[in-house]
Length: 157
Ligand code: FAD
Image (tube, rainbow, N blue to C red; front, side, top):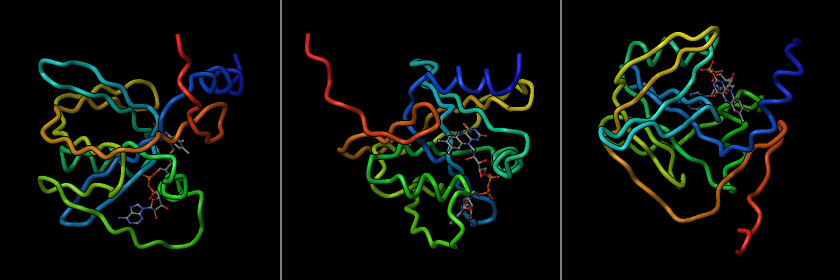
């Protein structure tokens, strides 16, 4: 099977969009990611998947902690910025929760310590144990077939 077929099929799975953040020696680093899922309620665990070429990989391996910032539909530019899709430099004003940088006005900031990790092909799966959560109201930024979109009205029964 060719890579394009695999990518296209995976793109049929509509997701939200997050920015993963971490910190090394007081310096924040962020990266856009949509490979995120909830794993366990007791203990409270979530999972992210980081590519082997991403600078974020070494940073989480070193810091042992990360935050998942779930973006609102107003934060498309932030997603593009943290995916390296916008050329201009941008100063991002982080908030700090339990020593980790998080994005203001995200729908949720989920702060984690690395619980365990598993290398899977060209990605590393990090399971994080959740230590803190902050939430805001708003509508999610969605990603489907390689494009950003808004979530349409709920289907009424
Ligand atoms: P860099 O390329 O160094 O950083 C990314 C960008 O963030 C740069 O523009 C940098 O200037 C900026 N930045 C970082 N820290 C700061 C800071 N403190 N202040 C201001 N700007 C900062 N990749 C995955 O591995 N897993 C995924 O699940 C995943 N999902 C994605 C979903 C979407 C919708 C998109 C668009 C991309 C996704 N990617 C994913 C790809 C990933 O976002 C890019 O490959 C990214 O550029 C890799 O980041 P990096 O850690 O190498 O950092």
